[in-house]
Image (cartoon, rainbow over all chains, first blue to last red; front, side):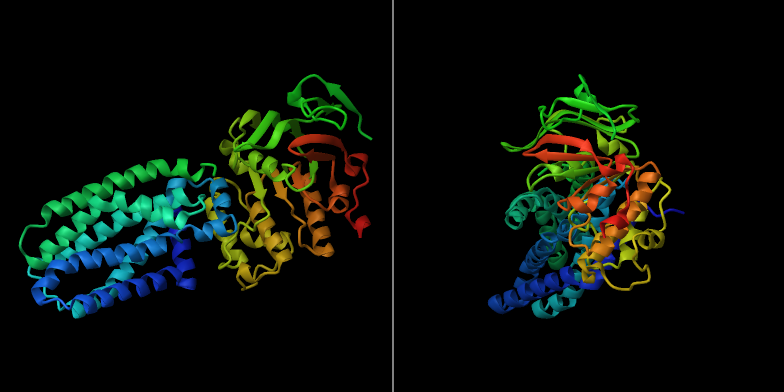
Length: 224
Length: 256
């Protein structure tokens, strides 16, 4: 049976990252730095930790992911590999989906490595359903990555692309960031039901994934 | 020497030194054209990279495109590859106005390798072979052997010499066995032996009725292969003349 195109792209991206470890190393370093610095700067009580931990985790993930997303298409641009991909018969949407999945895996790997560190530094003991974090974090991360890869592709032909990506990405990502932070806080404090925010995250993911998949072909073949 | 005759239609047209770029010449007993440009211009902002170029390319011929830097050679090839769209004018490749519809039949080799530095030659070609589904692709190992590279070479392309990268890049183009080969500076940074090896390979492709368009600054190297020499100047067709091959004297070894 033939492998779907997006799996071919995904396998390629995973193999490239396995050899260079560029994205994971830079993200992990940045995220650990943010978590450690915030814990030293605030020295929060256990109750205060529960209030702010969700926000810090999301912001640390977001900034770390942007450092990787800025380089998401760098390898394709370096020797005009993107032109060879444009000339292949594989659809652009498959290239996009493969890239999103690869970056999602990288960021999730960083989050998994970060989680125990986070619990230790912030002395966390969730009062709500902790397992729901296993739903919130992937949904929020997907929202960040799907938009990040899309806007990174949109800005690759611009001169100041590293500045343009956060400028485009962060405003669009605000609803998902809100959903991510508030649902994480609800889980950690046990004060409210995170269900509504999780549904918002899921809806956001479906809408933006669909739009990005539909528009990516246009972005891919646009002339700079 | 092949006779050329003036025609009225710019669609069949090939401009000459004395004529404006929209004027047209076409050879007698013209074979099937596979790509036609009619008054095609390409603008980057206010800069015209191509100006009203009218030219047609015939199946099984080799066109050597000459011109100074910025003459429009690469733009012409990128446009035929479907990577750029004309700003004005009409273009047909294999009868299609949008070359993207026939991209499987076109092979494009750029100045850059269009390969991942981190992968070996075989890994790169395997990846691209998987993307060229629906066509009878060569095996990656066969494509590498065809350009004189050892498929068992376990070294990433980033560590290849410039000549080896050029050959690996050509191997990627050959994978999908395209009918139209667009080669941008294929001999740049190649030693003379490798360049002649590539010339012999290109001669084989032409004998298989594939059309070759190649740009080069090394006229003396590519000239023996040429059916036609197309010279561009400031985005316009300055001249089109018969190449030595059209006169039946192709001998890559003669250039050594």
